[in-house]
Length: 210
Image (cartoon, rainbow, N blue to C red; front, side, top):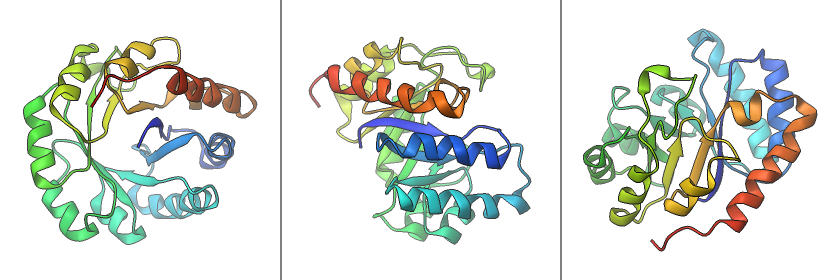
């Protein structure tokens, strides 16, 4: 697991599907996460089915944010916040062969607990200030370096990341950089070149040794 971790935005679904296809067609998206807080739960399954088909077309791993039942329904991985269910339940219902991640904010203790319960990646942030979760504050890059020194599993950085400010994050030890706006705020036509810029950043930026 290394590269760009793309999270869906709140665009109308047909526009979002166009943008996702533009991104996934590059072959440079490491993971796609479904996170649509403004869409009614009753409508989410239909959207997930459409996006799952896209991910299958481009062999992109696909996970669901905060909804284990939806992940189980579609046989997908899941990403859980601290208050969105137990990792042990996700492992029990999905199996250890699925991607199961946990938000750890700026807490190494949260990460230790998540890994003990069976998570196979941990996410830290917000690294930089972000409009998506302004209440989250920001942790800075040091938490990534601290996590890298302790954990051998993939480490995901999230929060305010752009191509321009993420070299230090990757160098500190992030395997995955999770973004929304830096890709999906762009037009469909602009997305492929921005994804490629991320791919080049990962290729050129050496992570510290695990």
